[in-house]
Image 1: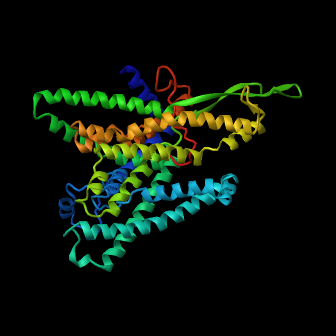
Image 2: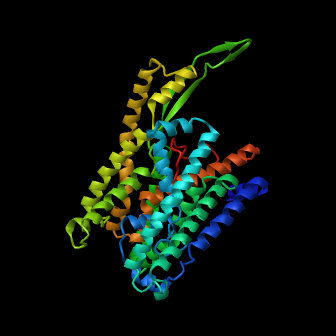
Length: 443
């Protein structure tokens, strides 16, 4: 406890770090306040009654990222999701389209062009999603929409408000990245997920407190949750270190190179993206079989169904290999090593190095994909074992992976500021490492 208090004092004594923390907290407070401001023309109580007990599949994922604002018909109902969609699309374009690849290699000017195109694409995606959201509200909200707001007027005001709300959230994310603790988009998503934790925690505790013996079960649940979090930390930070030697170069009286370093290949390079893609794919059968009484539709909306979890695991593993292949380029790494006079011991430079790195990556991607699939189905397993549905989402899946990853990144930023000013780190031994993803998009 004494060490913790001293660390907090050190953090507060650094003026720059204190300013970053306060600035981040201020924007987070604004975001949470906006998440509770309802759209014009919506009756919150009627909407809550209409939404009670509904399972909306992929829409629940959007609601999770938006911190519950989606189901509350807030001005931030779409949250940061349109920007995420646009960022993912632009990232794939930089991998698949040579023109965007060239633009990305232009340095700061190229990245500014890509960021500007991402913003324009975000506006277009937001308008489309806002229009779909209006249709969703009018069909599922019952009497929540005021009669004098129905029709074209309600559509226009809602689309404009949601678009402005999403762009404002995107602006806050960029400001947190520039002037706050960094990773603004990821931090906003994490805050939205954590906002549901107190309610889910108290709901689970209330359900377990009805009988004396259930309190012990609740304690066991918390212990298991901590163990799962530790496992997720290992999954996020796990790397295979490939040794790399650099040839010696003598320039004048100085010697350069000759050092032995390591090329860190992440066990889970794809991050949380395979789970997001898999959840979207698993929602498609519910669109094809619109009849909710259909066995297929019922299976694909029940996350604790054994067949659902089996198919979901296979899809996650497949998308992990696919997404890793898109974002990880062994040829480019081999070329960079060759240009910097680096080589892997026992492996020839050029194509043999690329083949070697690709083989190592394939070997470590499979266990990483299997572990990611297990993490993805853990909420369904917890739900089958009696954990309340709201609390079970924190036992794995997208929510837990994003929270663990963003918290590690944020702690790494704080620890870096401490070490730069000759203070002790946040841990007695070792240093906190963030995700350090090869992808440009972190969630």
